[in-house]
Image 1 (cartoon, rainbow, N blue to C red):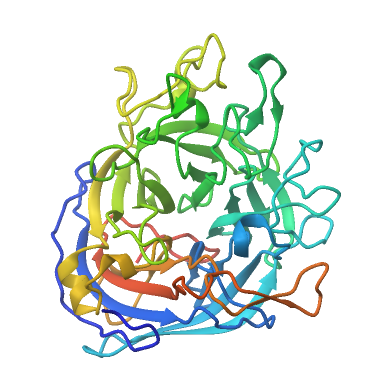
Image 2 (image 1 turned 135 degrees about the horizontal axis):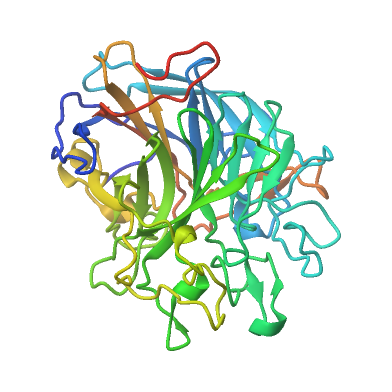
Length: 472
């Protein structure tokens, strides 16, 4: 049984199944788990607060050698006025060690996210039902449940979130520049079809649009920084109904793309279907947790279930797929856009269940990394999948000087949901901080884990920077 707080052994040269990405010319290979580390649940950030949930999103900047970790809405599911933030880390990975803990993370800075007026965002629920311009706490600040982060070639950052679901562009100082709003059929709306209004709250299920607390979980950019990608965690409400009731086996979630060559005037260019895996028994679909753009038509997609440490259930799904848009149908180009309409629209056709109409080809996907590979987990000290963290949500590619061309380290990180008995947070009403035990004494505390896989990606195109080459 795994004991938290100990060192995790590292193994080099462990090969997983080599599975080709069938729609690409060159094969992508997973060469095995080569590094692990953990951050304890009660670790403190540079702002003096509990450093939880900070790999809800992840991105690596090779120029500054900085790993950015993105925290979500904070503890207690939006009940706390937590101030969303980005954690900056110095990353060290020593691949010369074969049986030792070889990843070191040093928190070098903590930056709180601010809106376009310079005010702090809040992770508290977007419960201002009278305000429909953007998610907001009633009579308070903007609400933000940040989930994905990517660094743009111009030095700005794009952060996706779940309340809207929106994608925000932030400056290098993490002050908001602008918001990208999805089309109407993605926005959460409540009420009868004829009188439906936007309602951003995550405390109740909307009648159309994104599911509660299941917005844009993943965000990415094309290598040249001109195309923005955002993938919903789960199917829209209208795609998840059967006979008027929620169908947990619905698996057709949506990827949107925008042309952002003029950032102030983003143009929606694509909408595609990504089909999620089904758990054992085919009665429930997995969720999408993160995307990472490999090249203009290929993504890595992280899927997981809601099982693992803290749930009492054995984890079944935690996989990274190589996904290709090459042959996928762009729903925005179908005449009349029947598949891109709100629930109840008489001209709309919902994409319910597990199958698709014959005129829609989904994004193709091929298994790349199975994080639950029992042989590798056992070597890393994990034999009980009930004690394996639930929310694997961060992905990033890191170049390492010891690796040959086209080989990289693929980092995968955990969002621990702030699950500790010793939470300490500063809020608008508690500027000096307040102690919040997020888990009870009988529940499990959850550490933040990072795994590193050695991978070969011949078709990977690194994010282009001014005066830099496109790929190694």
